Image (cartoon, rainbow, N blue to C red; front, top):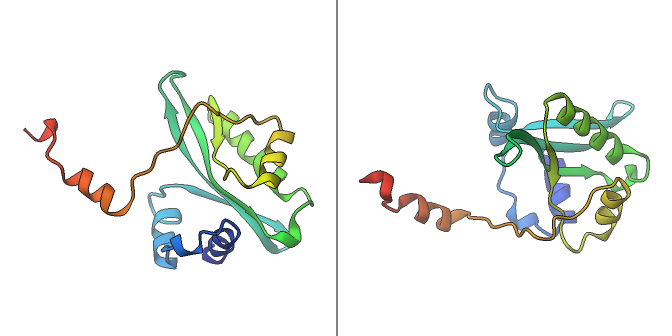
Length: 150
């Protein structure tokens, strides 16, 4: 799993951002209370890709949603239906779980992925921008004394 994550990070020009360890993955993905779930794609017995997903919630729909965090297929296996098979499996999970949405983010420059997703009927949510707190900013906000602390 960690090797796949590193390959994905190289593809996305984000290898500097990978801090995950095998122990972290064992605890958060394969432990007693996983934070997310993993699907592996294989050709024969050889793993060639993965998808990491978790469930979120839509208050407007009053239904859960399935969020695809990462989808990666090794370059040698692309064009063989592996990515599509992973997405089909995830769509089936979403339908089985009563999800009102199946969503993911894609880097703006990743035109092969964008074209692939559009070919499936997926549309960009252009009216939304993702915001993120990490590192010191996340810690600083968490340390603030808020209304709930009084």
